[in-house]
Amino acid sequence: MSNKAINKTAMLAAGVFIAVAPAMYAQEPNPDTMKQDQADLAKERGIRTQDDRTLRDLSDQIHRLEAERNGVSAQVIVDERAWTTAQAKYSADQKSHASNDQLAKDQQAIEQVRAAKERDIQRRLVLDQKIAQLKEQFASNNSQRNKDTAELKTEEAETRRDQANDRTDQNQDNRNRTELNMQIRKLEAERNALNTEINNDKNAANVAEAKYAADQKNHASNAQLEQDRLALQRAHDAGIKDMQHAQELDQRIAQLKAQYAAEGK
Image (cartoon, rainbow, N blue to C red):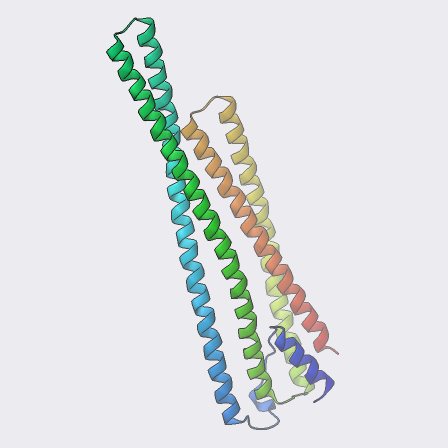
């Protein structure tokens, strides 16, 4: 096998695909080899599909629990207000020399509200723990998915390599470089457009942060502050998502440029 073919095989194993023209085959592929390759690919794709399904299920669970957790947080705020109101009534009844029976009822009401608040706080804590566990599981499964994806790409690369049979035609190399150049330009255009989105995310986060600070200064309700906090979190999450996308694009562009350089050797 030529050095160029060995370099191509190495790039294929790394998950970078090379366009292949059937007319360039040195010889007909072995049917048994092709059959085994297709079976291996089907197996790897099945694993990848299951990985994706599991990640979607975990993501749905996390979103449901986070929504429930936000509802419990809102209830805790309601409990705090009810507790304050119950205490105020008890103090007022003391000052007005209410009967012992009334004061006892006031104390019972305070205790009931306090117990409800404690239950909701504990419930929120349990939800936080569940969410943290699911996120940890999501990260672990996502790591496994990446490994399975790499294995799938390796299988696809081996299939292409078996079919290619060490082609070294320069015309094919030129077509590869043209295709790579088009992919690079497309991804670079997408990356440049993403810069605008990242700037928009920053602006949105600044606006949300300013509103939150202003509402705090103006002593807005806890419910309003919670809405502000959620809006700020959404803006930050959008920024993080776009930044991660930008990193993925940068990595992909770097891979394609490395392959483009290797094709010219």
